[in-house]
Image (tube, one colour):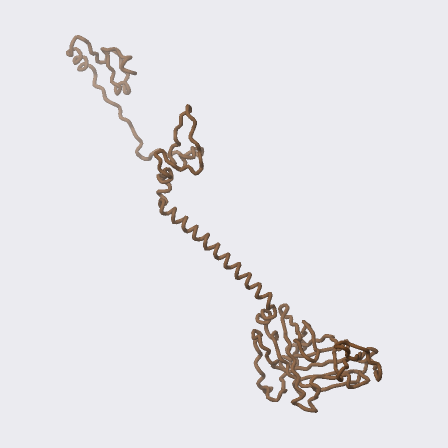
Length: 369
């Protein structure tokens, strides 16, 4: 009760009212009669004892959880938003406006407790520096990687055979196949001189002059698959990417076999050129059988080591080889022409009698015997 509501001669102590219910006659009064009557009244009144306020000291009441719908600035301890009067319009707002009330820059963020607790501006600057370094490093790495990839692709496209050979196992590689001319047959031609075999001397005629070298390349277009191709040569034995097939695997006669059809060209005499179309070329490249030609080669007890396919030079084939060219007779076997002004002229028909298909012309080469 406010003091203005109490009579001037009555005074009520708040603590007594909280503990007991008194009547107006028992309350001490102050009057104009003097202080004696007041003292007497207070002496004669019964003694008043204040009640004990009990407190539960065992445990404090639980802290209520923070509401999820609190304002954003209170949730992140960003301080109260600035108070504006409705009589004046608010200042222009900008996302990049970080000026504080006294003109300082980034004041709210600098004084933010969360930022200060996490290490302050130094830590933020360090994180930004690390992120910037990672971005620059990633950009540089991608640039260098793309350049290397482009360079490697150009190199592989320019030299596909070399990359295939270097990554493929034996027998992939470039080889010189050293053989000798063993046998010549001319039964398919009515004029025996129309059919000829390089180097035009058999082993029985001259072992040294019978030597014939073939430079061929073996590639691996897919795992466990091999193909053989010829290189430019003066005796018109040209073929490309002919498959190799393994025969008698895991035996002493194990070999890679190939065969293909080509048009063989011969020059029996000056100014005459003959064509033996559909000539069959076949060969066997042994993988264990030893060679004995030329005579200076390794002995059968110690076969030569297998050359590395990564070497770009032509390596000697380390084992036995046999190669054969064969063609049967027919109406168009052979076709001979006179050369005229660097090209083909009239076909020669005189003294040319067709032979049967069972009549064979052949050239046989090998490096063992």
